[in-house]
Length: 503
Image 1 (cartoon, rainbow, N blue to C red):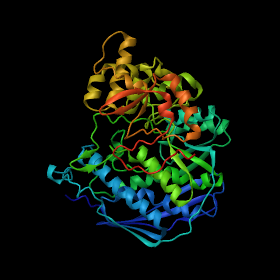
Image 2 (image 1 turned 90 degrees about the vertical axis):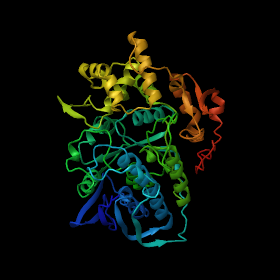
Image 3 (image 1 turned 45 degrees about the vertical axis):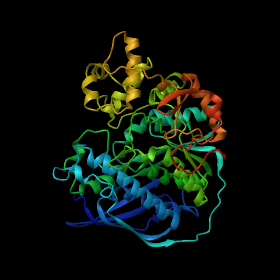
């Protein structure tokens, strides 16, 4: 097995200016040395006493994705001990996730000759090959104790259904919201642009960071000998290598979050059904490629922010509900925000409007959710031919795994469509729990949402569900709302850190 692509990757010390943060990446391969300049641009002054501290981690987070592929990774600047621990832990977990979900599984991006043999799929081979070095690790740093405002919420807003619903619910229950748009330099920004233009016009607290990190990831791919040369031509809902990137979005906004003393950081991470899934392959613990969207990671970050003395809370308001219910609440309760939705990574412009491609797996999932809820997909830019294609090619798309939904969520959505159309679709199976608020020991704890918001959020969501359910001993059991609200952490078989019950 030879996954080595880099002799060395070095991240230079970031330069902090009034409205810009930059840092150079230097990579060394068998073909020599190359450089890339990572840039973050802001629309307001972001210099504070902590900006350089945030910047040191911000610019380093992308390198976490390359621990499997480099002999050495170096940060050429001093770093706090807790920051170093964060990077080491993230790199170890991400290496396992990439190994299983991007190398072992054939995604079409890995060159022939670098695919693994069965005997090579071992825990030892899934460990990072890279030794991560720092100029200096500072210990015994004086701990800060920031006092943010916990009614303020920074919502990482992408133009997708989850972040739009998160904003809408928090707005309704009276939180002070700062919609945060991460403007990547490529066409992926089109996904968020419709929502951004609306929010920028209507919500004065809207924030945006422009960054060329998408170009950095492509720069790295072009220098990885294991990746096919025409990787950019493959239309896919997944990235060839990178799996750890959401926290880079968040860290890019930390100067703003600190400046405005915002207490909550929200991602739109919906419910992932663990039923029937094994989070282990040949003894390799993994997260199906979504570690940085998992509740375990949110709790880790909440705990880490507390240990650092920043005291920010990281969580998701839609964690207990499936994508089917997210779409239901958004379309029925918040139609104005629903019409901003562009849940597609290949959007394009038609007659001055940004529309979804209608043909990717992500679009297929959205069309299925909308039809299951009795909503016409044409309301958000899909064409009749896209809708017909999903129905007519459903069997092929499911068999080829081109629809990226939890199996129970897909089957129940198709069951609801069958009920509406009055004829049986393939794979249509009733799974009643999909229409409940979910709680389980793995992906959705009772204390996921901070106590001060919990009941208000549940009151909104429960109007579009059939109740509350808890997964235990291999089956779903209906529970009372009071049991979900009490907020006792579920600790069966895990060691998750951090609780949101204190706030």
